[in-house]
Length: 607
Image 1: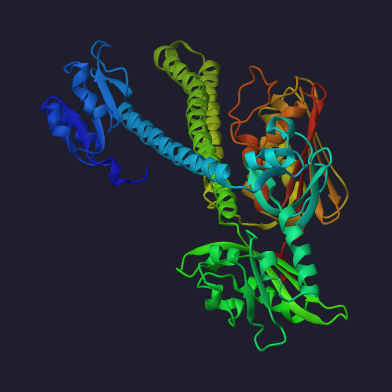
Image 2: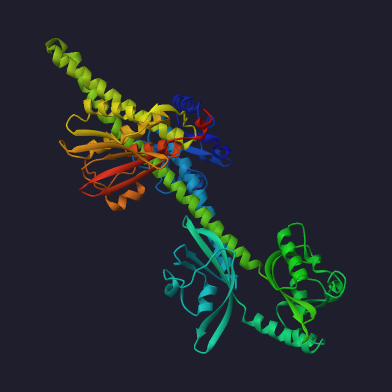
């Protein structure tokens, strides 16, 4: 558990001296701070951390102030007098153990973390919804299949349709990240709007998706047409564009450094610069410390190449405040084709960028919360599964040992031998489970060692299949075949044993006695292929995609025991070999697991 000063100290409320000392000793080797005894709620006014209260001696109202700001664990022998609201956990006052207390503290810490992430997510969602409500640009999120997953209120107004009509429907045309496209949207009969669509790669609910930013540029298109017409026919067009709400800049490329020769009132409103402050200057006066150098390079290239450009860049107002500026640059020519001016339209899209960033942050926090929840579920599942799987062999060992202790003198040598063999078999089972858990933990921490040596895998498989026959495979027809060829290759023998042994054990476990279990070796391009097949219960199609997740078991295993760790171990060991694993199965007809391991690896090529 990570040390966190926010949890110090741990307060004990109205406990006896020996109780305080005992709990303090329990916590001495943990990340939690020393224990402090508190005799009155007033003493907790400035406290921080976790309060452990003896609620047999405290009235419900005594802790009301504490409950509003600190997590409280109740120590009680009855439910009488225990505050119902705000108490995070309850533990027995009599019979309290160190393990129970530490488990309770760990659950409180985990719950507090989840609440912190949830609060952060709620704050982010509130900020996101505020930005979305204020943003005039429509935002739509589609997944990789083109299905619409999110529609902002502005997008509803743009399409003149409610979100309920748009969600889960197909967008109708392909999109790719980075593209800027103009679309025509039929808003109502006889009324068409021109929309500019920008596409950004993102994630939605943990899967790849595209964020579509939709801006109604109908007015801008009319403005561009009016500007082109005005520039071609009359240089004195200031009055015609003075009322435009978007910023307009005109530059003169015939003069050195392509200076600004005209700006409208919309530009002044966006940037804070008066016309006399920018006339004669280059557009670079809007750039600042965080302006994207690549975007500036593209703009300079557009001016040199005399071509149009549409880009979004971080610019700075006169007062130094940054804003996201969408710029549309267009060259203007006279009737003879000579370049006259560059006209640039400037639009403040800061709200749109903030909405996009807020949406991405919201998704990041949502994924973080889901991962925290999943981690908590995995921990609980791990403990319950391991506890159950360990309890059975331990019970067998205990029973056999008690029989030997009480009745050894009455048993025959054969009976005593059977009891000892039963104990040894269960010990080996426990060792195998611990080994699987160790492999998974080391793989997750990137500490699982891969130590390949040259090995004849055909000979290795023959030896392994004989071991399986003599142990758990006595009631099955275990068959081994190998295509002709040389099977010496670099593998980690220990990891290969994990792979094949787990797959063979599963094949036997999930097929009926007397049925056939096969291990077939063959070659395929630069791979050696291991096929382990059975004629057992098979794997339902819906379960096959999650087979290699820890603790996941098929929905049809019913009462067949297992931890759900074996195939996770197999997957991790195959990945360390740079191999591939696949499954072919049909429920009720059997399963074939296919492992492909490369025959050569770079580390051996120089030998």
